[in-house]
Image 1: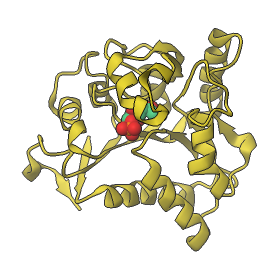
Image 2: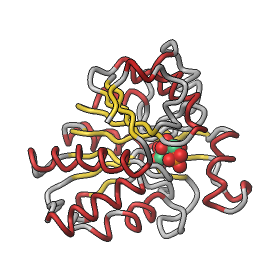
Image 3: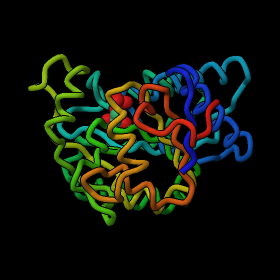
Image 4: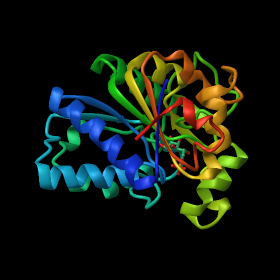
Length: 250
Ligand code: F6R
């Protein structure tokens, strides 16, 4: 893993966006795997800025999102579908037909998962997959206990994830308990490059386990050690448990 430690959230966001920009410049029809949550919002702002000021062209870009809640409609303000349009897609020139997000309100969820997985494979996988990390080490919604062979599927959200995400819903009882998520296998076997972003001291423990811990399904992010091309961009708080002298600082 390449580890980059920066001073703050803004720098983390800028470096993540720059890597995406370079990818799109190299290949106009790049396939991006995208995440939601608080972490990538700054990076998406930066990509919007690059689109407006530097004419970064998204018209040929294809995107696949990691996950979506089950049981709320796409129009729900907290759906990940809505999140992506509000925070990125409405502000860049992406073709909505090239945007893929699992649909958690499909009647046949198993079929939706199977089709989603198939679409990713048929597209040739992600050139870059963006990830955040949960305080319990989840990536996507692959909670502790998820394994290396998991494909896109319906998952049960853990108590700690429900608690963490209640900040968006106002009350924990309103957070959907199920979601569709790309599996660890989907992520590891279809991503040419993975960029994981983390900021804030509440992520420090999970970040430490991901980088220094044993590879085990109790900390799903540790499975990223098995991928040959992972870059982790951390602010100093998220990196506080690491030996800072041994990693690249920007
Ligand atoms: C979101 C996702 C999750 C988040 C993680 C961190 O699509 O897959 O794994 O990346 O829960 O969330 P934040 O960024 O809100 O701390």
